Length: 555
Image 1: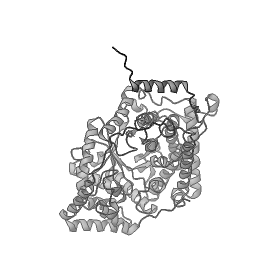
Image 2: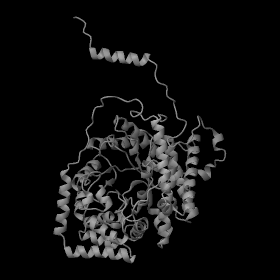
Image 3: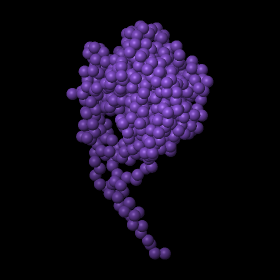
Image 4: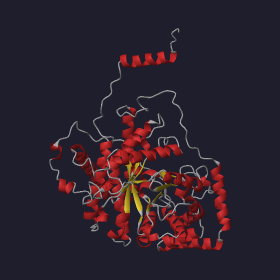
């Protein structure tokens, strides 16, 4: 049989030979710094921990200062909650995704809301146009919330809701659905993010000026203490601060400075620290630098424990425990070679688990392009499950504890975070630091320096500034049907037509009245949502009293 040369195979062999024989570009094996720019030594020894006292710096897991974790057995007793963040389109579409993820082994829900819901606009408001259902689920009334959780027992599932300006309203909607299901509210478990300060710093989905927004948050603290004792009233978010470009130490420092402001506001409103502090939680980023991220979580726990004990006089050990949810870093994902994101996310999940998170969301490979497809969301969940059940890292508490490098980095990040807090204290506190633009400027500076290092190719981003490929194959992405917006517009208008108008109007007026009087807003908001008042109508009632925040440019 005559020999037949395969042209494509020959070309491939020639390219491989060329790549072996040709001189290859030389890159440094390391930049010599962490992702945040902290210098890293080639090797660490006991000399780097000369003043290190294991008892005071570490303690045992489950004991002050909680460096090694807040539970004595950590994942040996219970795995972290696998809480995949999801929501898009209509309530019915998101309900189908939640039920799918629960069937795949997800152990907690995490709700993403669209921008109009986050900003307190109903789907038929002019400012909602083009955004309904795009980056999260559209929720405007109790009917939407009922559809969102149809077939899901709120008494048996823990739900986190990423919502801030309208957190009090969405919490009231959740409670109203739980009541209809006959759930015992004292046993209801979940979290409202409810962290408005980071919106002024890093994210921008605010409605009211900072001081009345803080008042709404302390109203939620006080109401939940008696009505919803198992609910986590706030998740203080460093995630978005990091996404905006902060360093690891800034993420910890600015987040804990926000937390200090919330604690100060609650105490000023007459609450005892040990009455509300056990229901505080935190939300951190899980970025690419494995060692730095592990050290970051350990430093945050230790610094928070010391702040609560020494600054606020907390006596309940639960007040000193920093509980945190982690999410892998969306800003690290690339549209180029999106399959590489699977590896990035796996590293980030490992960092969060070795750092002792209580719950975790793993981003999907396609999230630099669109909301995740069902298949991509399942793979992200499987990433967590493989780590939990196959890697062995859950078998012992704080397996990296005592490492010279980890302990040195933990000390460095704690010192850097403490310096951030001291600077903010000197400016008059976090509210004043936000109003003057100080925090925003610091984050912008860090983000600029990092981006410059990428553009100078001092930091390699695989597939972006090195190891690029041509003619990338497209991957399937989720597309939101534009018809969803009109469906939601028609739905909210139908709700307004069907409801008892007199009851709804009276309830909305009571929200406005309480906003003016200073009485706790939560009972009036709950009555309003149960009268089928909409998110936009209730938000507008408070807008008439509090006004809207106008951003101060950080120059």
